Image 1: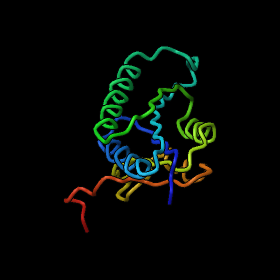
Image 2: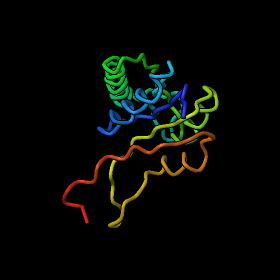
Image 3: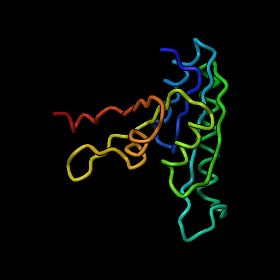
Length: 146
């Protein structure tokens, strides 16, 4: 498989680093591009362009870290911060606009009512993204094995 444009949504979890490294590994041999997207979900009670200073500062720290990580992997990463009502539709719009041929989504290992559960955004992307989607799930903590 040849991937020339890979989009990686991030949100500040440790698994984001794994997803970005994977994106670099699959695009580098083909001189592809890696796009990283941090989306701040803005409450419907606020204007979409509302200033959300704490979340913006966190997003900028995350994106700066990801760009440095890309350089360590020998890739220039294009990082963008967006504000949207919901992350899922915003990611789909970016995939279409950029012509991405792969989305790599980092997924923490979360349990909900005792069973593994995908985040709402992950479920939305699996149903709606028009290209391939890879889930890069973090390892199961040893106490949860079996």
